[in-house]
Length: 465
Ligand code: ARG
Image (cartoon, rainbow, N blue to C red; front, side, top):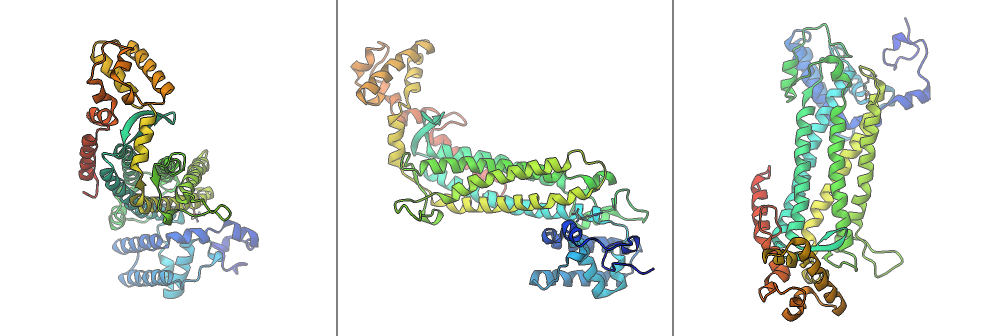
């Protein structure tokens, strides 16, 4: 029987050629060619296994591996001709292999389907990208630790409701960011554990009648084990959703850092300087220096959360097993990977160059009555009930506001008119230094505690830094 469209996949089945627009509409090669390396890696393992079980001769296996290796070189050199007629990365590579080595190339697809092939490729791809993302994340963590060490004694206002609350050290504030990233790192590693399971052998959906050795293929590809159910293997994209959820949290954290850096670098806060290399000017206002990198990162957090929603909706209500819908998983995933790597990299490059304007931070903490709680705690230690102490301190703050002075600038006699319990030692707790030094329990803001936290973090880091 002659076929109408000799390029068409399974063409004997079809009496008509694919509509030209449908061909373009259904093709994925433009984006899934990004997984070419993984596709080749998976095919080499599959061919090796097929030879071991006697489906391919050693000559055929060697021809396949040689051909695939050469195709890999062509792709890396940019000489490979991708064709939309071959629909996706899998068919493009297989077609080229058959062009190169003939009949052996046509045997490669024995005992597998593109459904288990693509599920394997994405897992291999994400596994390696999670490593690259983790590397950038650890670079950022190291930069934060270094800056926190430099600024362990720097006093700044701590905020609640963006109102000055209590003094903290800048090192302590930075270590809060570090903690967020540590959880992010763990989530990525956890996600990697669950995605590192091998779908190959599930074939289209029901497995295959060939005596395949899935354990062998799994070992060759560095998976922890072959998947347990063929229907689930070809249709599961939980790992993509988990990854994008972990990525959304990373971006949410980066957007919070961004927001603080943007506020702090404004003339109103004036707490930090972001180096010129990470900012741009305005085309019209000559005085402007805009914090572009944090702003862009803050903006990009939205798209990753969008990708998470896309993937959840993509999978919702899909019947078992593979559906073409699943081809739509690639673009959100790839963009999530790119956004994470770029944003983490930009931050890791920028953070070491952030300059703390220590005097401004200090004066801002002083202006905001940040030690009011310390005065209340002092009165409690002298035997007053906390609610009464709260009231006394409110009166002292009122006097400070009216006379434009910090609590530490009021005289002893002035303070004593609100409570006889106040004595000269009150000034030890009213200073910013006294306030932060007192918070020396685990997780506190005292410079000594922060330095210990930094040391512990350096030892606990997965890189052993
Ligand atoms: N390009 C497809 C995808 O990304 C590969 C699997 C296609 N399988 C199929 N039976 N149409 O999901």
